[in-house]
Every structure is written in C-alpha cells, then in structure tokens.
Image 1: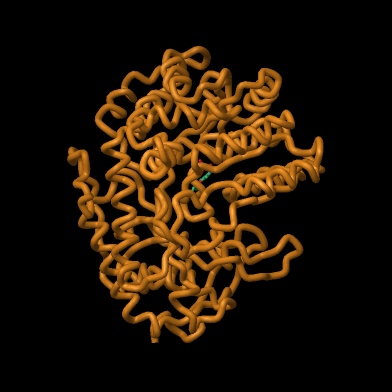
Image 2: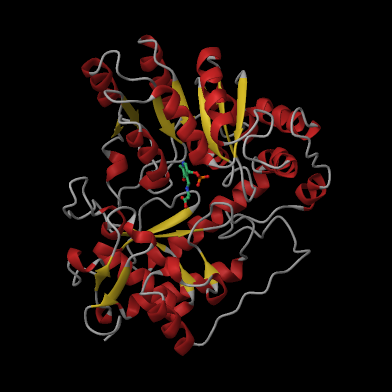
Length: 461
Ligand code: F0G
C-alpha cells in the first residue's frame, strides 16, 4: 500500500489559516493561562483539538442544504433524513437531536436512574456523565488487550465478554442496556469487531437486555472490520455497517463525526415503548420529533454525509492518513497508542517525558509545547482531564495522553507531514520540557477552564 493515498477530492473553496510568529504564540499561550481551550482559533495553525463538527462538507452536501425545508412539522427534509438513516440503521424509530450528548441525555433519562448499571467497552465522557447524572453507574469493561497502549492487536475496542457475563449475573434486573462505543474514542479510537458486537448481543439478548451502539464513528469502525476481520475484505463498508446495526437494538449517534456534518445527532431504537418515552423527553428539551434540535438544512446535509462517510476511497484515505502520522512518529521512537486509531493519534506523554512527575501533568505540558513550537492544537487526555475523584481528591489518570484528532477532509498530506515534523522536532528536545501546575480550576470538568503555569517559569529550559 502507498504510504499515503492522495486525497480523493480536490479543493474548491479555501479557508485561510496562518502560523503566527513564535513570540505571538508564546503571548497567546500565556494569555490563555497555558490552556489551549482558551486560545483563539485564529491563533492556531493546525487545529487537532477534535474531529467533532470540524469536518469539511462536500459540494453535494452544500447543494442539499439549499433544499432545506424549515416547516415545523413534517418537513420534506425530515423524510429525506429518515430514509438515509433507516437505509443504514435498520431501526424502527429515529429521533433527531442537536448532537450526540442530547441523544444520550434523552436515552438515560428514559431508562437510567439510581441502582441501574450500564456496561460499555469504554464510556465517552459525556456518555458517562449522562449515565451518572441520572444516578446510575457507568462500568467500562474493555478487554485486557485494549488497556495496553503499546500492544498491537486488530480489535482493541472489543468488550470483555467474561466481564459482561459477570456484570449481568451480579446485577440482575439492574442493567437497562449494554452499550458498545464504535470506534472506542476514549480507548484510543480502536475498533470493535463484528464478532464481538454479535457476541455481546447474544449474551445480552439471552437475558432480555438490549444492546445500543454509540455509533459516532461507525463508518471508520466498518472499514477497520473490512481491513482486519476475516471474511470481510471483499465486502463494501455500507454492507458491514448494516450488519453492525442489524445485530443490535439501537444506536445513539453524534453525527458531527461520521455524519460528516457540523452539527447533528440522533437516537435510533426498535423498542416502541422506549422510543415513545424518549420522544416525550425530546419535546421537552430538543424540539418536535420531525426536527429534534436541527434545522431542515442540517437534516439534508446529514442525509448526504452519512452516505459519503461510507465511500471506500474516502475511508481508505482517512484511516491511512492517520496511520501514516502514527507510523512516522513511532518510527522515531515517539510512544503512541498502538495501532493508530481511526480518527486520532494518541501520544503516550508519560512514556515520552519520564522526567516529568505525574503531578506536573506531562501530557498537558507536551500539548502546550506543540502549540508553542508549531501552532498545533491537541488535547490532553490525562490527569488534568480525569484526575479529580468524585470526593474531590486527586488521583493520576490511568494514562497521560495527548490526542491529535483529525477533522474529516480538512487537512492535506503536507499538513500531516508538517505535524509529524513538529512532533519530531519536539521529540529531539524532549529532555528540555518541564511540567506545569494548576493555578486555579473549577471542581468539575476543570480542563475546559483551568489556568496553569510552567513549574520552571517556562515550558522548555
Ligand atoms: N460518543 C462519542 C464516542 C464521542 O466521541 C462523542 C463526542 C460523543 C458521544 C458526544 O457527542 O459531541 O455530538 O455531543 N466526542 C467529541 C470528541 C466531543 O472530541 O471526541 P457530541
């Protein structure tokens, strides 16, 4: 395979980005309290903070937007959207929401509550927060393989089936559903195999419990199945996606990822009673059931985006470009979560910067240095994000990672090469990087607004 297949699209409209001078980056970082969430997007050169809502829409999506019909009820755009979703997601009920977490809130309001237990391979943070906000317990039961960053294995997003049996036996009548996150974002963007999806469904269905996919990156997961699971090499991604959904009972979707849209989400379910309860919640907080929290033109853009996300040429390029960056920096000794995920590369900052103690947040420091040296914005997934315990005490997160998440169809090969060069430059100077400390932070979700400072007066000595 070529190291990097050329982008299967060309550019029709350009958006300027600029690399502000080093002194201006230093000033911007200081003014932001060393917190990249507080840096103005205009002062970022390559923005890899997230792949959510940041993708580029296609010619056909912009054309579809012109068909958007803004009728409050029963808009033609709703039916276009419904057809597109049900073509892939073979569920009886589709409930549109403004984004993924709204679908999660509506679902867990309907079926969560004190005493309930929700198993998942790994809950994404908003999913966990929505389970816990209703008083239920969120359990992560990933396979042991999935928890080893350096290990190379094809499906490190798989759920631990023995643990699932154990949990279902331990909490009879208390598990309202089993969730599987495809791909497993919080576990390094690793895929889940069809064999595992089916096995999870068999175990759960044996006890009358439904399975719901957190489907934000379903298309990337489908392509990993094509590449890695026996018997699927000759199957189209769309057929694989249909098989993934046919095995389960519903999906919660953030369409800001593999919906290739800037906004949107939905819940898709087979259960009539549950769907009815969710629609009642929807009307309270999102909107009427034929638009949820979305404009008619969003529904149109999504209908096209869901199909485009399954184009094999696009998926081949997408997965390969992320893997290319991972391979290039790993070859120079930069430790990353292996193998590269579908949407992002995760640098293991604790392994890269062993001289920085955990209390000085090595991943946060590395993320800040990548901005300082190259104008790149990444995100810390480590002890600043996850270090605060429910009782307010502090405990190191299992890993200190820096996530570089790629917006879809936005950056070119030369941008990816630039990112690799910056990381390699920083890697050569890694012994000079120093840690950071928190100056002030709110008690919850502190990473969004915390103010930090370098322990040594500057990030590099
Ligand atoms: N599920 C997964 C697996 C996600 O990655 C996200 C969002 C959500 C649910 C929530 O969806 O943002 O539309 O409300 N992930 C983004 C990220 C924010 O950067 O990884 P949302």
